[in-house]
Image 1 (tube, helix red, strand yellow):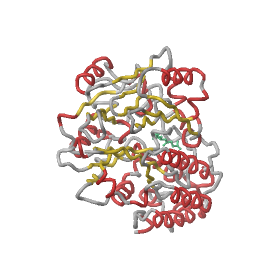
Image 2: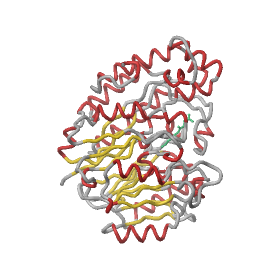
Image 3: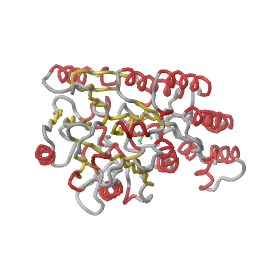
Length: 441
Ligand SMILES: NCCC[C@H](NC(=O)CCC(=O)O)C(=O)O
């Protein structure tokens, strides 16, 4: 069956700020309390979407969530009107207001894990929402993520959206950032490679930073998504690289069709994993970057693996990279050699995503890959597909509602709550989503 990969990018929300909320994500820690620019952040993301759509890659958009999240603050005992809840939290516990205001839902690689219909037992496309259990500011994304995905993938005869796993550490799940799919044409059955950071009660685990994804979670997601058991493989990420800031697997590896582009230290027992992929994926082509060429610290600082590897119709591939990887002489030297060598990667495309990068989110974090057949693509809510009109509409919308400067202290401003709700109300009309936000219920 003919199928293509559609990239769904998260649109940055109005409260994008730097709060240092993600222990183990070194960019988040390093940029804590710096001044953010939500308007620029949203526009940088839109420019990437537009450029890729213009280059012929199907592109769609996922809206931001309602922030501050008044509901979660009420759950923590703050009372009164919505404005009073925000004001009390901001005065008494600014870090809680910060967490309840994070625009972290922009990183939709962590929204869900997707199984294309060619891989599933019932022939539907499955999406399991990620619980993001490891971080308080991200765990509250799951409810609205589910609403939003249901509003985009409405047709229940083709799509099956699953509620997130139970919210406990044992089932910590970070979505597609710890999932790869290898194979031939997109429409052919592929091999799904689930990567976990720890197996509770067994094996090795990182010592310094948390391993967010568990094996038990990956197994449950594979079951929910009805992945054909013959097309599954589970592997552990190297705990030593988690301790160096590789908090998701997509910071150290990216795959597309038959290609796996990864660092030599990415996985536990990497030679054995690559051998089993060679045995199971026809034409499997690993591109393994040695530590001598790019040390793990440079990979973390430049996000060269947090890239999008996109296929053109002629089989060649384009690597979509953040500006930081071009600014680093050693990494750029390696990448320039890579495109010159004999492999499918024939072009490097660089984007300025500085606002997202400063919180640890590169090109790959900002997108959820959804392989769809032509019929399935027709069944997606058409209003979320990126094109010239939507690009212009969303840019105008950003100009109208977004601030160009935000700090933690600004989050207490009751106007921000109001602006956010007005903006999202308008956005649900633009994207024809219906009522997906708590304030609309
Ligand atoms: N896939 C990229 C995810 C980045 C995200 N950063 C954050 O949430 C940082 C937010 C802050 O610190 O303000 C995370 O670590 O999950």
